[in-house]
Image 1: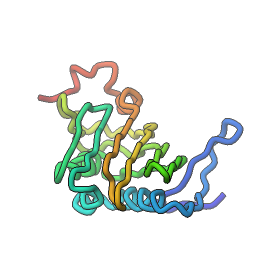
Image 2: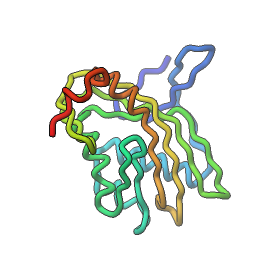
Image 3: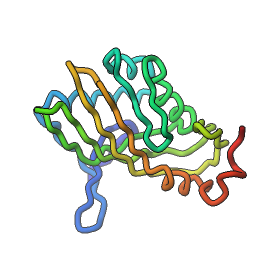
Image 4: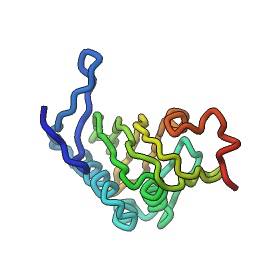
Amino acid sequence: MRAYQHGDICMVRRINNTREKHMKTTSNSANEKFIRSLYAVAETKDSKAFTAMFTEDGYFYDVSAGVKYYGNDIGKTVDIYATAFPDMHRELIEFYVKDDENLVVVELTLNGTQNGPLELPVGTIPPTGKAMVTPCCDVFHVENGKVKSFHCYTAGTIMLGQLGVLGNLGAVLQH
């Protein structure tokens, strides 16, 4: 098995109910390559560069939080997770590309230890020191080499459970 350095974008695939890490060869799809580069920018926590990869009217929809971000606010999504999870890393599991519709769907996990405050629309969760490996599915529409829409379906209940706050959410949130 190959060792992976922190920051590598790699694949995790289930084979016979076991997890096996391997690097996936990028396809020839320009849309897939572009979305991979978007994830690479997110890994560097550069919210301005991340935002620049969206069309002027593009948006990021955090479905589990129920919030859409437009314009410069798009970068807040990177900043919120970078603050809460300084070691944040995205494990890319699988890409599904439909180039004729400029559609890219990505299965992934969000990984990190919550050593900072996690800002949510309903309040802030103080650092728990707990690790998360949260399933996520991202759906992108690409237009002229930029993101037109990004719908992020994070398994919020799994994440909150892994952080140890789901059972007593009301007591943990700070307003």
